[in-house]
Image (cartoon, rainbow, N blue to C red; front, side):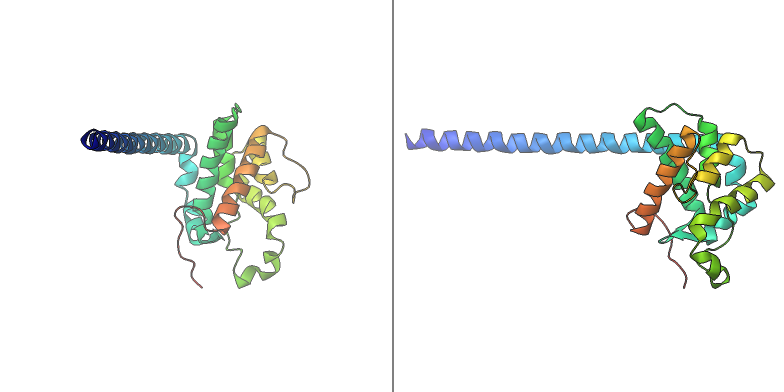
Length: 199
């Protein structure tokens, strides 16, 4: 009787262990699958940015924006790339069909103001940067690129409601939302990447 009871307990314990091991294995498979999906997604986002924004990504002024900090420890260049990627993800997640070319180009150029808004040189502008930089970014972008109305609207109104007039295109609404999300994550240091800020 005691032997039967002990055997049953061992058998039950073995079953519990087997269930735990199977759970662990399936969890690892799921995390590997998620990791592969994320890699594929990141690869697709990079391809889209290259397809529609190579000229911007390789331009001297865009590359120079790597030395200017936008939020937290993230440069203006990295912030703009992040906003472009998150804009694509947001549009996909919400099932919004939009012009990917305009979405990407507008997102990459939305903060094309080309100065360090934290520097003493721009101290007067520092407090009002949020109000004025969309117009400055649009003027700078127009000097270097042919922008259509949708791209201009994205750049000019990405700071809504500070810009008072709301975005006129769904792409501009998406970039505005993605910009706010990325800015929050960067300011609170909840993003991946970034660089140390020189003081």
